Length: 277
Image (cartoon, rainbow, N blue to C red; front, side):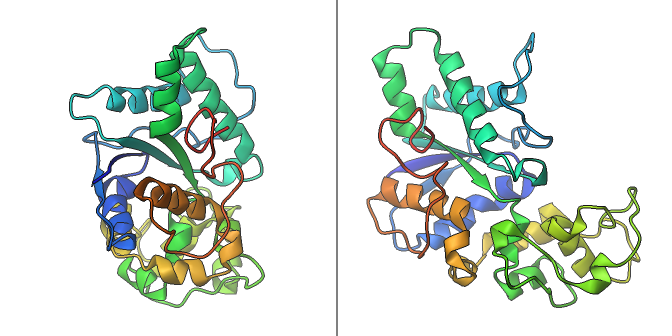
């Protein structure tokens, strides 16, 4: 049975992504483990330029990579390590910056002249995946998942866009004036799944930030019906498909979902990581 260590950057993913992925491969012999007590800090909270700025100390990307390598060195190390982060709207136009920075950080950690063994460990056992633009986008592929997250009304999305190119089309959500100290009345709300979900949970605006990742988010993710998610314009849900294709490759099993991998994070031979060039 292959074991996979999941390194996540969000509380919801940290608590519930393992159960969600396990359900998707319910017929497979797969062990998913979470090697850290808490999620690691996200590397994509702000825009990432490439090459990154000069830094006198380790960057957030370096810290993420260090957590992957530390997991490999554990006495009870899993067979594979998958690090997963949200792409976020700040980086949605430049996802290649994120993957390039991750690849550079691994090469930096390995040193100027890495051994073949070290290179093989990373290339054969480590992966980095992105959820686009963030985890909550996929909840909109299953109406019942939104209800489990606490939504009290039906979502209205632009049908010409897939979930990873998220566009809300709900005029009651889009029309109120912006308010930067408000949980969802922000200028970027139309493309922001978490802000729209916050509105769907509390459309009357009676409580601020009423969507809770660690409560409703975990309920939605733990039992998310990925089959329904991938039926929603599957050719566009490419980052998530790359994750499932990578898991299927590890299991030597077919990917349970139809779709196309994203070229930046698809499984590959002779990359820096299993799925990063």
